[in-house]
Picture 1: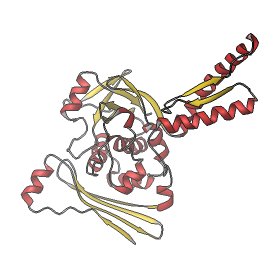
Picture 2 (picture 1 turned 120 degrees about the vertical axis):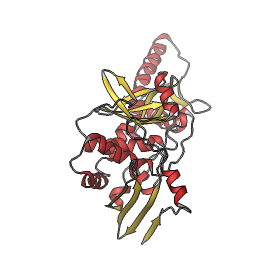
Picture 3 (picture 1 turned 180 degrees about the horizontal axis):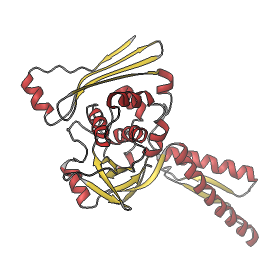
Picture 4 (picture 1 turned 90 degrees about the vertical axis):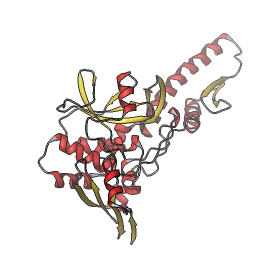
Amino acid sequence: MTHHNGAFFWLSLSFLLLFSSSSLAQSFFQLDEKDNQLHFSYHWDDFDGNQNAIEFSAHKKDFLEPLKRYRGFNRERSQRELSRQLNRYIRQQNWRGIQAKLTPRQQSVQLVTSRARNQEQQTQLEQYKRRLREYYNERWIDYLDSNFYESISLPPGERGIIPDHAAIASEMENVIKPLINAIGEQLGDNTQRNYINYVTSFLQQIPYNELTNKLDSRGDGFTPPNQLIYYNQGDCDSKVTLMTAIMRNIINNAKMAIIYLPEHAVFGINMSKRDNDTTIEHEGIQYVLVDVTGPAAMPAGTVGEDTEFHIRTGQYTVKPVN
């Protein structure tokens, strides 16, 4: 049996009370592995200081196999793959006098042609180029989709390739069903806000694993939901993806979105708004913002000063997820 114990022991009650008033931390985490079964146990305090406990089990292979080999986007790797596909296509078409080559730094693919002997051959080579550019664009979209990446405009107005968090959340919904069922058993027939706050406090107490701050590296620290649960750590993008996978199963009649900010991401849901809630409106839908990152204790509608500033100054991108 493999046994992971993440219990925290505090030296004084006064320190515990001071710490828990502004942030959430696991008072207990345990993962037991036996006979190809995983059993997860958690204890943590919610926003009102009440202790919550949840546990669930899953078959190890079924739980860990999906997206096991997921990797953050790498431009050189993507262009090498597309270059191979283009040259394979050229051979299949039996075209002569043209080939795809990587640029010296492997940041893109260029089409190289031999010198045309006459105008007819020149015209033919130009036709090859046009078709190959179209083929490249088709394969590029397929490459992003099949590897769970997406091209998106992120604040401060740069375009980048990031994990397709919404697609990954969809892929993970059945995998994390044991956790979703355990949450449902704990809360039963309850309000949307109570479910949101329960899951938010659960995610905030999972240790934070910091993400690198470069736009092109935004996927480097990303952990798919099943691995986040297994390793008991994750960055903001990883946690908001897990939040999306959970809430789309539990609340299927509310519009949801991921809101990307500079070096951060939060969850948004269209639900009944309270006076002090931080919200945004996108395409006629109002979203209450939920920051699941932690360890700061922030119930639904409460976000940090930096997030407030970026929302107020319009430095965000909204990605609806349902």
